[in-house]
Length: 389
Image (cartoon, rainbow, N blue to C red; front, top):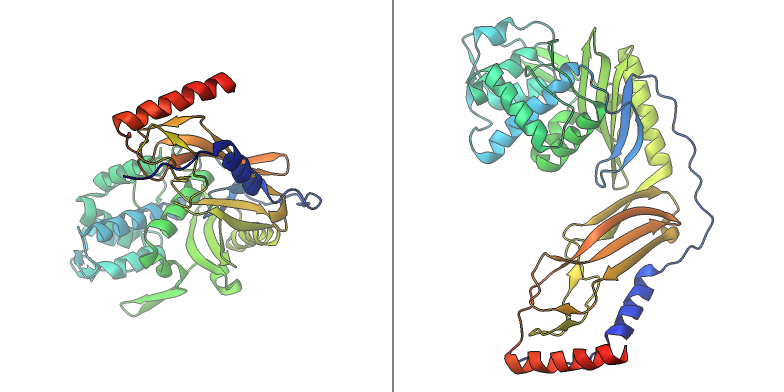
């Protein structure tokens, strides 16, 4: 049976708060210039790790996505591979419908069978409409059924202003998305299926003796850029979802409705350069890090470890780490039983006077109730504590 130690909760809570609120503000507020002027109908810049939006304009405006649609097509194929339902070396039959698709193509032939991994590269690198339809039919039986899967997945990812009608982005009524939703989709692609993300950085792909380049010009201009996808139709204009990584910071830029292939690359580069120049990604606490060990009454243990259920990652202006301040609020007089994962306090992080995040502090372990006599003793102590407080 565990020996119950003397209780110095007030002292330890004061000390813990003192430590976690340091360091105090030590320098003047970091100055951040206004974001660049971006010539696009809609755009957004996102820190992929923290999920923080750094720049946006009409980011929730519903617009035709053109071939940016194929990001969801690829995501679902990658999901099916990971689940074991399909394999990279599966030989996928090419239907008449896939073969007859216009626009950008991989140039597969009707009646043949093509390795699934080649079709996936044809979708991502060559933006092949034929490859997209072939994969949609293989996964779901038909492109219409695949579109249902796309919409279900969009809802699961929080893409609340998106609706897909086909797997290619071919112009169609009621086929739309937003810069915000595309950024969330790009983040999911990078996070969920890293084993296939290298495909998005391939500058060209050759199939059946035909070599086609990736239309993402930033892959040639900026070594930090490693994805993701271009799109273009007359209605949508020139669109690009790009991602780049520097010094442990990954940014995602979305531009929709620019007026040329050069413009979508140029405007995306503006956003990425601005983000890397003036911001940094900072990991404050890891998941399961013990942030406090408050006193527990009526329990088999007299303390419980509190922390976060997921890592705390922030995007902050460069040079502003000394201005970060964390504060914890713990529920008074915690009493067993304590349930693992249940919230018993709050962590608030501020940058100067601005509140950045507020996260629940949860129990990292369970604490069962103590025996009868131990609980009686604690009730007596709590009674006298209440009299003197």
